[in-house]
Length: 91
Image (cartoon, rainbow, N blue to C red; front, side, top):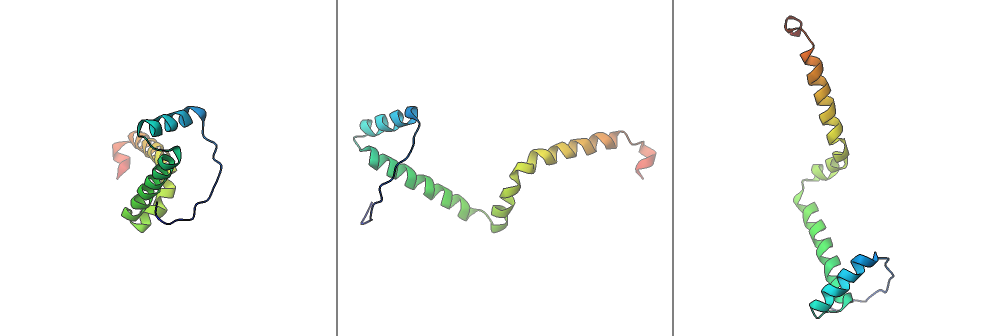
């Protein structure tokens, strides 16, 4: 990892995940520390890359994702109501 100053920290990891991580590291002949550092670095790089690919306005609009299903529901209600309008009243 280059010439970095390391920081010690404590993480709480669910036991089943910890066992998987430890087993994976052992199969690869690596330390748990090496595997966790690499996994975190890859995850951060993927997140950073995904943000760079988005247009700035999409990053902002992404905060409205939770409204997608509500928008669909409203569209269905509107369509159902328009079916109740008599054809001659639509003009």
